Image (tube, rainbow over the protein chains, first blue to last red):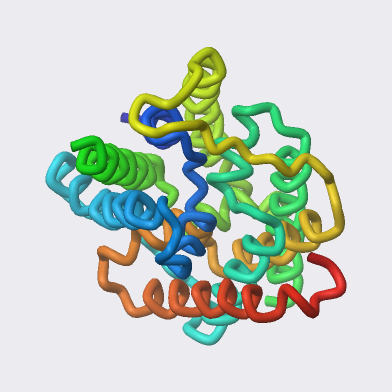
Length: 137
Length: 144
């Protein structure tokens, strides 16, 4: 399969997952929201959120069984940069109420103007960050 | 019975999500950063991931809007906030900086934990700390 075809097919699966989670459980498959929900074990939806995240972690090993090899994973950033990035991603996705899945995959599908603005903001900010890194490097 | 079904459904949905991420190339932070690298060697591949995902997610959303309730739960938990406010834009902006620095957003980072790679563990631990920091600071933040 060409890179574009596997990217599109992978995207179809991601969207199918979000569609099924909505149709079966009634919830938005926003990963940052589900991860943050782990800190609220009193919530009624805590166990289903944990089950979703467990499935998510098992996804790549399942892919290895189906495809025969681990997907390419090239991590360029150093550990201190990854730690800083993780802090920003964790804090930012809570302040902004979502990430690529909640605002992108689910929010854009719902035609939510709020999510569309969030997607434009994190795309612009991500592109600017890479561009600045390119100038400084 | 229904509780077991809900857990099984959530597990299956997470599994599909993770397989989709692996197939799509989203687990490769270098490729993600290539997509964000519009002033350099721009790699448009990930636009196809989003196009595919919004297609099936959109069909599911259209179908869900016709249902009175989800199959296994009492009610749909639709997002209620519609305001485009400073926390939304500031939060998305901070997230974008972290995404651009690392090439990881939350879904691929959690899925990549199964690789056991130390950089992924460091990123996810810091992400949890960032979320906890927001939980602690939210009452005193000038924007929330």
